[in-house]
Figure (cartoon, rainbow, N blue to C red):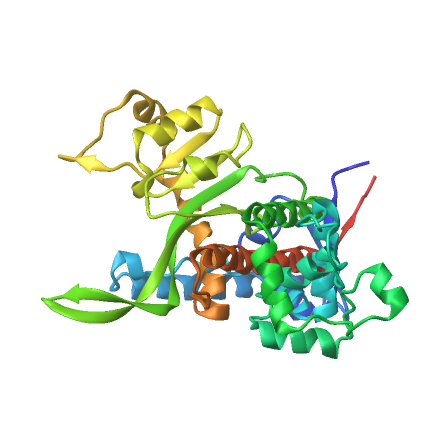
Length: 402
């Protein structure tokens, strides 16, 4: 059997001509896989096909040249990426299918994750037997941030969808209401350990990888990136500004580890130290490549990465126009190139996706609940990423040819 090719559903002739501009679309959208576009209407004579293809490519190159000329007048940091690297003909179709899912779809994925994790907490044999199943409560909590719901609204949505969170024993006796109330959901979130939510994040990442591998193979799966950012809380604190006391919103600083090819978050660590990447590097398997900005250009990061056989591509800090010293840093900088480092910018996608959905706001007061809330927000991101990978299966179909 030969190499798999990608077949798309039938498209109009004019759209197929654009798909034949391989340099723009196939290379960036589908990796190195060949593409077959089936036509839904009649094909004109071959001479016209050549002319149309020539005109389409010429139009694209002309518009790009004009765009580049305009962008030269803008500061370098504010220049947009080239459309040949960001636009893809299939992305809109996959994104629309990924957004077209119901609360039942979210719960189905959450239940699958919980089944792999097991019970989030042990139930006591003393006292009254629990009415609600810990697993079903945990599944409800996992989807809380997928739709940006408060505990009250989550409880209402679960009731509207007739979600039964009771234990099997309570079902047989027909005890109590099927869906938990807001206070019960809040109690469940306080009971779920942080480590449990961290493992849920990793399971969703692996599920997205499995879906991705079915269609695109294992290429670039070991490329990661680490970045730091912060979220704004709804609570206020007193801050001295110009000898005056002002009220500012509290913030939570944290780091994320993202798998670039699937746009999934592997780990989240809340920390005020913006330089130490080691808590996240422990989640990276040996033989991987991790891209990081200059904030992480610290000797102990390089040493830890080399101990675990991880290649770190870090933008070097300069002192007197020369990189800082250090044995492990010098060894790592041999692998550095600006072309490779360009991949680091992809870590901004999960952060940007979150900002677009909820404005990066944490509606929790207690520090432990804030950390759990962060994990739930990126759990919601991974659920969306999993839906996207599943949507690619519907948009594209692999076909084997002898």
